[in-house]
Image (cartoon, rainbow, N blue to C red; front, side, top):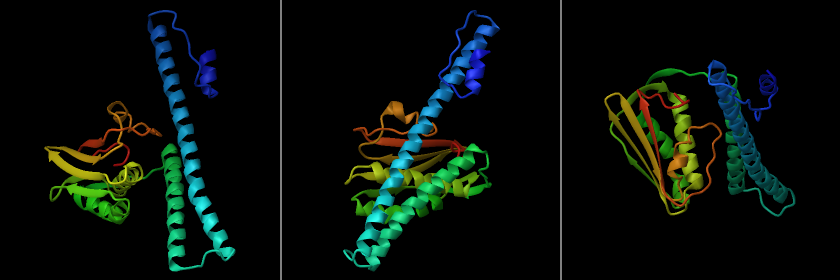
Length: 238
């Protein structure tokens, strides 16, 4: 009972010692597995919030520096300045939207509007919106797509997923590299592949990419992020 009280109070480090191999012993093992998973998720959440806080500082610092330079007369207020400020505001907006989506997901308030969706136009639109940004970093964006693949899913959530994958590849792929997006369908199974060049992620960490709040370090080998979905049921986004 003491262990359950500690767990309910938020102490996820607590464990109980199984004293038998009967149902009570199995219950103790299940309790320890639950506590271990909650402890792991709590740490990943803390790391995620630390990452978000760090990423918020960068655009805020740029905005402050730009505005102070304009105020002091060091920099003129030109269309280029406006574009730079808008880019930083866009970065901030995306981070705030990510936090909003996270809070809604925690509360079970995310709305899903499932309907038949052709994935190919979504991938082409998402990729087209990133093409100039990829080119500016010397990255090639390539597609190998069929004419049409229809799935049953939420169009907006799927677009959000594709945008996140593109943003991650843009942010972490070494300059001069590439991202190849391909799609194929076999019976009722659809496979989407986002294969980017170095640094990528290791094979063992590839299996953890769907874990909430998971963050990888930088690795020397290319990554292939494949998503298999029965009739389009991609994890948490359909």
